[in-house]
Length: 199
Image 1 (spheres, rainbow, N blue to C red):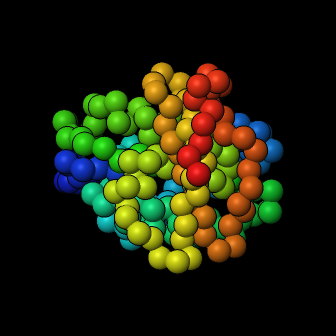
Image 2 (image 1 turned 120 degrees about the vertical axis):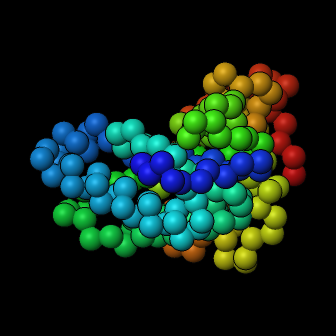
């Protein structure tokens, strides 16, 4: 990564991605997995740049980007999922099913990285998602404001993320042509008092 990059500061929206079932995909594809991994990173980087985001880090099949604007981050995630679906993969089963987690908070970079619990929260959000699913916290939903009519945030209610209390209200980004229904989120069980979901 370039030492000249300028990471957003103040109000920052963090975006984490990874490939669901990456170990199995690597086993199935063998030597071709490296090419698929590289192409998927290129697709994501184009989407992040288009949204004014900055890639912070990559590790294996995971990526981490930061945006100064929550609305731009959500649009970049839409571009990323659309581009991944449109990409010509070697076989249909080779398409990486990328899950995305987004959280917005106050943060300042130090030494080219962020050292804040806000980053850890964003990482917990992506861990709760399924392949092809885009989740964000209520903080991102508030920061983004009103989205265009064909882009919607579905309120999934409060969810308990490992290491974080109280429960976080999570939203699913929905766009035309996307899968809308997924298995239950991968979150901790809520206590009975935390089951109430606002209408």
